[in-house]
Length: 213
Image (cartoon, rainbow, N blue to C red; front, side, top):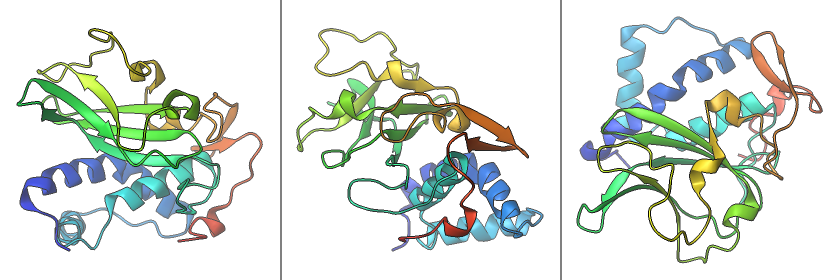
């Protein structure tokens, strides 16, 4: 299915944010190539026609950074127990609220790696949300990460909070997010090897990255 025109800009924003890490991953596979204008245009064509799933790209990037594999199961996306979520901030309640929804979480059993795009200020925000913070949310509800109407993060909640303050789980980058355990949500020790983030207790598993897909 082709991507709707109104969603293409958002899909491209998420893709472009992931692209540097995708290129690094391809380099580890011996698939490195020079990114030229023709290649970028072809990727945009693929995105527009639904041939590239940005959510799958995000899973690949996080598997690469966490040194695990993609399993794509109902309760998790990654072999380390985590689930990957892309979200974009949108208006609701007749444009009186502005927040980023994170849905389909009821059956998840591990940490949520969330990459959030805010389109007004054109910025990305990252969250590693542990299961204990969202496990009481009913099946019919979502996580809603709040923003001000001008796109500024609302790090101090307004009014009474129903669940957690999701900004308490903010990370500085995709790499920083990968340092949180996929099951407990706690930060774990990592070592930087040849430009990649390697979990101290997990060997590289590039050859098995797409097991289960």
